Amino acid sequence: MKWMQKHEGNNGTGHRVCPLGAARMFDNPLRLLIHQPGKMLRDYVKPGAKVLDFGCGLGFFSIAMAKMVGEGGLVIAADLQDVMLQGLMKRARRAGVADRIRPHLTAADRIGLEDQVDFAIGCWVIHETPDIDAAFRELASILKPGGRLFVLEPKSHASEKEFGKLLASATAAGLHEIARPRSIGDRAVVLERPPARL
Image 1 (cartoon, rainbow, N blue to C red):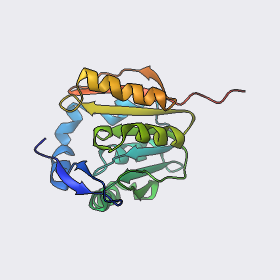
Image 2: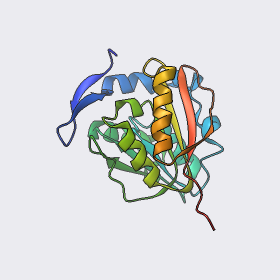
Image 3: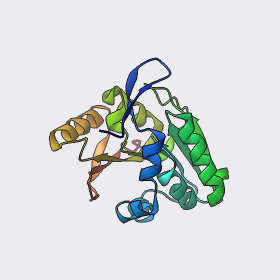
Image 4: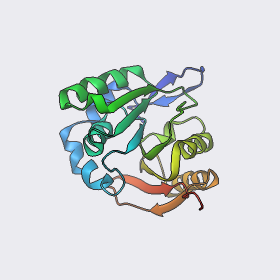
């Protein structure tokens, strides 16, 4: 909890978010020992896809996904803090993938995207949202039919009981569990918006 700080969102709703200093600490080469984006996401992120990194921070997953979607794809990097998006784009330029990433500043209580995406990831962010039910409803609406959402929550913030409540919120939003990937120190789930019926 020490790395969290009070942050006033765009609508004045106070809630706890990860500050820049902690994000810098998390996004380092050692993180690859527990999160390997290429391996974790290879079944979900394809060339030409449009994907969302919800709560992108400094772009650990955004930059990796930008390489995976290729020149014909797009990564929407969404975060509540503009300082994170600025840092992400600086890193993306260094990695040569800035043209495939679109930064998007969210509100405290709303992502605010008109796009629909093939895939979304929310790593260590759902517990920070002021209304988890609303967050899942909006994420479900952003996914295309058949689109997947990969959620990772740190065990330090999500007990089994709390994670169960999170999954109940996802189910109520119309998302179905399709996988429980293993992740050191995290509870993880892949959810799907049901494909459109023919």
